[in-house]
Structure formats: structure tokens, C-alpha cells
Length: 267
Image (cartoon, rainbow, N blue to C red; front, side):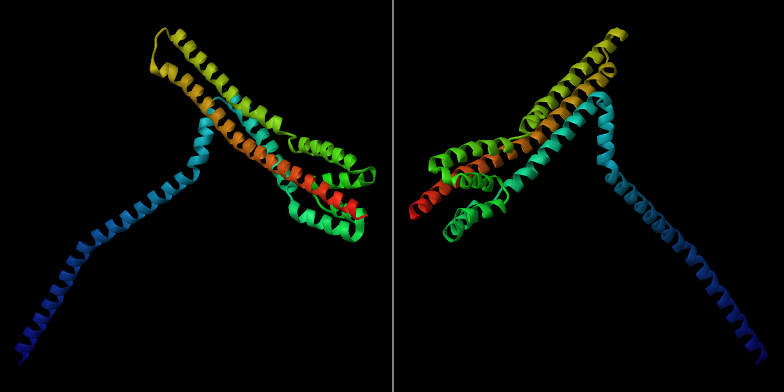
């Protein structure tokens, strides 16, 4: 019996040792795969982070690089042209939007005021309403005692004044629209001159010699055209807005004269 227990104990120890060896052999086989997956994941995360960072700064860095490559001198002039043109354009857009008013609603208030309180009440309505149409109405009502003919001449004259105020600043925007591509073309000419100077100094035509000058020429030209296109969009918007306001002024002025004629006949 003792020998039997001893044999069982020996076989148990051998089985335990064999199982430990098998486990030890299985663990190294799985570790390289897990390590490889972890390395791949870390590499992918780093590449994604680098790509995201590159995308985030790509636009700014490219614009900065092209600005430097185009020559800081002429690119600065084109940039100043864009800034000043946008300043005048934004000011006009804000002014024209504030000058836009509901002429039908204003006419209804003026008509009601004429019926209930007379000319003075209508003048108060115009005084408390912003916009060129209300200003024209006020000037016409203020001269109602001088007759309809005087009111008509006043409305026409003051309408011309208001139209001039609406168009104020458009000439500067047009100047910058014309100036931007001119500066770009000047940079083009200077870039080509520098390219030919490099050829003259080297005494040979090589792509590497003329590439810098041609790049400057193209970058300045494209920048000037882009600035002109942006300012031209604002300019056309302002012109269309002014035409709309002037048409409303003319229609409203005719309606005001009709209201004053009716009010004069009721007296």
C-alpha cells in the first residue's frame, strides 16, 4: 500500500509539473500577439492625432506660407486693400439694413395720424421712425402749409439728398475693387523681372532659377483677384439694396402726396 501511495504521489507531482510547463509554453505564444496589437493601436492613435493636428493648422499654415512666398511687400498692400474694402463694405451693409423700413406700415400710421391728429400728429410719427422714408415724409409734412407744389418739390429734393447718403462710400469700395488686381499684376511684373534677372546672372535658363519669380507672380495675381471678387460681391449687394430702398422711397413719396391731397380736400 505504501508503494502504491508513493507511486500515486509521484504521478501527481509529474502531472502538476507537466501542466505548469504547458501553461508556461502557452503564455509566451499569446503575449507577442497582444503586444503587437497594442503597438499597432498606439501607432494608429499617434497617426490619427498627428493627422488631426495637421488638418487643424493646415489652412492657417498654408495661408501664412503663401503670404511669405508671394512677397511680404506686395502681399501686405493687397491685404490692406482687403481690410479697408471690407471695412467700407460692412459699414454700408449695416447702414442700408438700418435704413430699410416697412413703408406700408409707415404710410398706414401717417394716414391714421392725419385723420385723427392732423399734420402735427403725422410729423410726430415720422419723427419717431428711423429711415430715409420717414425723413422725407417729415420734410414734406413740415412744408404742408406752403402748398402741395412746395411739398412735392421738397420731397423730390430731399429724396435726392437721401439717395446720396445711401450711396456714400460706394466709390471707395469700387476703388479697392480696381486697386486689388492692379497690385496683384504689379507683383506679377516684379516677379517676372526677378526671374529674368536670375537668368541674366546665371547665364542659363533653368527651371530652378525662374521658379521663384514665377511663383511670386502667380501668388500675387491670384490674391489680388480673390480680394477683388470678395469686394465685388459686397459692392453688388449694396447697389441692389440701394436700388430697392430708392424705389420704396419714390413709391412712398407718391403715396404721401396722395394722402396730403385727400387731407387738404377734407378741410
